Image 1: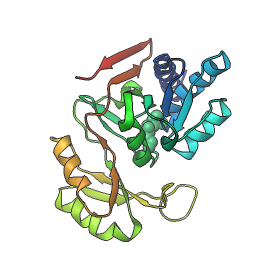
Image 2 (image 1 turned 120 degrees about the vertical axis):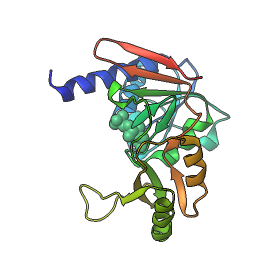
Image 3 (image 1 turned 90 degrees about the vertical axis):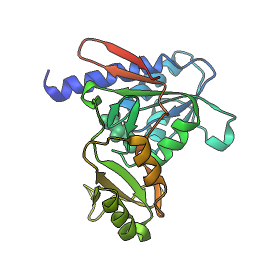
Image 4 (image 1 turned 45 degrees about the horizontal axis):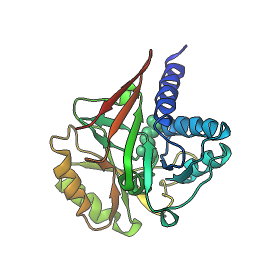
Amino acid sequence: MDEEDSRAAQKRRAGRRAATFVADGDVVGLGTGSTAAAAIEALGDAVADGLSIRGIPTSYQSRARALEGGIPVTALDAVDEIDVAIDGADQVADGTLIKGGGGAHAREKIVDAAAERFVVVVDPSKEAARLSHPVPLEVLPSARPPVMDAVRELGGTPELRDAEAKDGPVITEQGNLVLDCDFGPIEEPAALARRLAGVPGVVEHGLFVGLADEIVVGGPDGVRVRTTA
Ligand code: 5RP
């Protein structure tokens, strides 16, 4: 098995384990990305076996995967609460996450934060002693120049995320831009999160502080589940 295959197997393991945290009747936040997709696939299998759930997608991708898997989808304004949300991450350190690799972190944060229980699914390559991955910012298009200046003042290096199969920048599902902001090793994620949230024109940043309840890590030989403090 090459490295890509074994990483995919680890993500599948994490997703499948996280799906076992979902109970009959639950409203489930459905995260975005390949690891969350593994959980959605497992939930689809469970629905085929009789589990009754409703999913709240965090993106076009997770909605499409849920519908493909036969999971009924609903919306935040149609439910009283979200029982559990399952979502991936780009980096995890001490229970704090950097998300937004798929540019979906604004909707992901709304759903993940609203859930009673937020379960993060990753492979071991996402674990770090300290966060250092660039922090994605979803930004109103007209605010790009002042937001880039503010990021530089906070010690970061912002880069406009370019699309891969389209000329020009990535446009989010809300019609905004994404800036990937490299701050190097982040000593105080909570403080940085507060500062980024206060920059006018930033719709949402990808630092998820104090939101995760469990981190499910799919490894080469099994799954580890870490409960955050
Ligand atoms: C999307 C995200 C994803 O959850 C994150 O990028 C991880 O993706 P993957 O599981 O494919 O590695 O935050 O906005």
